[in-house]
Length: 167
Image (cartoon, rainbow, N blue to C red):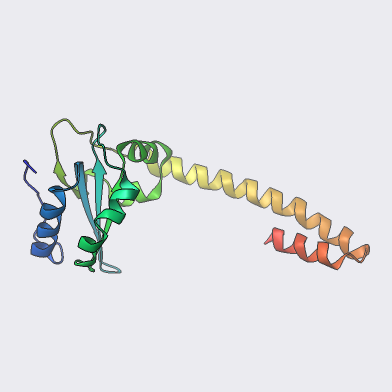
């Protein structure tokens, strides 16, 4: 760790959080670290985005440092490969939009990539949700039509399955 960690002093458990990140950065090849805090449920999420040329794997790393993570039960630690983070931002995955924005960035190495959400993320996500909802409703209507056909034919198992699929 060669670069400063900039965590807002108003973040809960500030000293403990800074120590945890400092200690983990000695073992983790992170290019960026994001800290997000949700006041509604008092959860602090610490996301490590691994370097692009990192030899470590995010999932394997989580298992490796599990004993260390257990020392800090107030925090949720996530270790994500750079390629997954890039994919998540391109696809508008909610985790990255909520926890990995410029506002939550607390550590960055100079040659690392900073992930920015798309400018029109909210419009894009609402259009995508509406489109998926319309597709789901359409398929539910089609499946529900089969319920009356199955009922008339006394196929109770098929009727129950079609009703379940409709929900």
